Image (cartoon, rainbow, N blue to C red; front, side, top):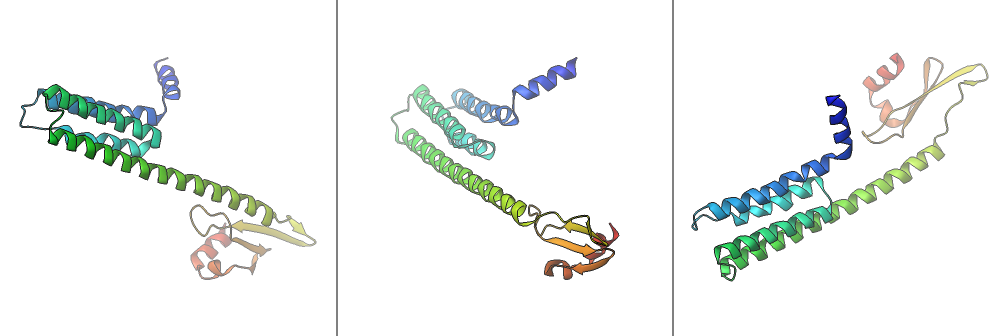
Length: 187
C-alpha cells in the first residue's frame, strides 16, 4: 500500500519538478541568511547559483523563472537592508540579471541543438529503414544471416553479411576489427 502511494506520487512529479525544489530552496535560504547575518556579511551574490543549477535540468523558461525569483530576492534583500539604491546592491542586481540572461541564452542554444539532433536522428533512422532491407532467410540453397554492428554507440548502420558459415562480404571497419569478426562468427 505504501509503495503504491509512492509510485503514484512518482508518476505525478517528474524528476525535473522535484529538482526544481533545490534552486527555490537555495533562494529562500540565501535570502534568510542575508537578512539574519550582520551587515558586513553579504550573501546576495550567491543567488546566481539558483539559475545555474536550474539550467542543468530544465529548459530556458524554467531557468528564466528561477532567475527572476533570484533577482526579486536580491531586490528584496536590498530593500530590507535599506540599501536598495546603493551602488553595491544595484551592481549585484545588474550582475545577477546579466548572468541569468547569459544562462538562459546558453540553455536556449542547448535546447536548439537538442532539437536539431533529434531531427537528424529521425531522418537517419528513416533513411536506414529505406536503404537497409532485411535479408531473406534463404536464397535458393543458401542460408543467409545478417548482423548489424554500429560504428558508434548511437549508430545502427554498417551491416556485416555472411552466407552460411563463411564470411562473404565485410565492410572495411569490420575487416580491421578481428575481435568483432570473431565475436560475430561465434554468435
